[in-house]
Image (cartoon, rainbow, N blue to C red; front, side, top):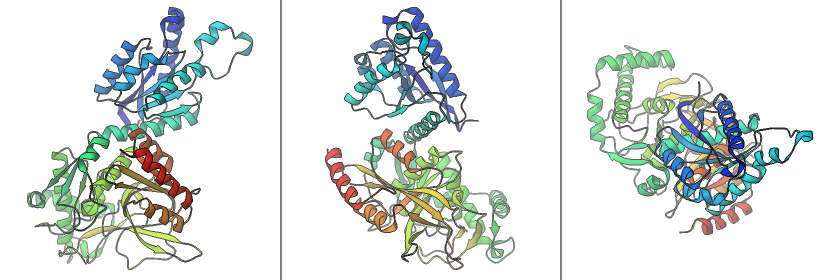
Length: 497
């Protein structure tokens, strides 16, 4: 079962009337076979649908208008089976509002050397036609992914999978609604930003709701639903004895369940798939939401603490991209460092809100004091993140544009037990090393809140940024501070308005 079985990419193939009906019929047959093979490949998360061979500017514009208005089509995969004069693509590419992948392939893998004649050459000239198409896409400045190789090659399917997931994330972003319960943390700069610009670039609609509305919804949750959810907590997690039914802190577990139910209903009623809260604006809520936020993230909702709507959008986009991939995605924060020369590492965590999708083992459901917010102690899930490769991504508003910064990291087991740290956490070593990664991150103006994903890699973030037209600074094993400084200067010129 495909991860996004209700969504599709359209395989669009260009040619021209010059070659005659017999050749064009063969092109159409080949297109159908390629689309059917890609559609049946479980490595691809979406459907692939063949469209009629395009032979004129009018047919191209008509098809692209249909793609733009389709709720199922997330993007186009373009392939020039023969030569397709590029000027006839100008009007259509100018109107295109969906992501584009240029599949540079040909129907046959091997050349039949002893049988090649001019009829074969005229029919199988992707090497020629795709260069013509590529020129006009570049000339028009259209973002796209170029994927070269034979369509039956697993590596090509892997590249198409990455493109398709980024396209689906952008498709989701255009429909994303985010609920802010209260404002952002006072006096903080990096969680501020231009919500209108974010909606123009990413499509995400960001709206604020008074905490009093959520508090009223919490009070309306029936006791029967609360009882059912607290029972589910006991089944899913290792429950602290003080939270068991009849124990002295069980009412706190009930409060947590009541808030989770209310937040979920509040979001769903408004068609929202991401949200924020802040400990500085809790109103009549029992306490700062903990386990409920963690579980909502595990179900795919985006989240940002202290009103950080940009990170909430980012978490949602990455969760969408990573659907049904091994690993998890979470809201995260670089919290503190281990600076021992023999093994520098970052301890990432937050007060409460780290998603259990990244947990190494069954989380423990616990209650501990929270020194801020002025409310009773919240219930939370406590765990260590699973070791392995991951990527840390931040989004910053620079005033004239949004910038993504992504760092490839290696998650490790904590060097020692953390018996007195009552929060979920991840320990990682950033590439190329902590000092270089931290300097690069700070030079770029990236935020302290991030999206952490062990399901995605740096290449996935590059794909997303490319299709969205977002500036991206990457930090990996090859990064040097000299290169970072130069790239930031070049980007300033490139993205200046």
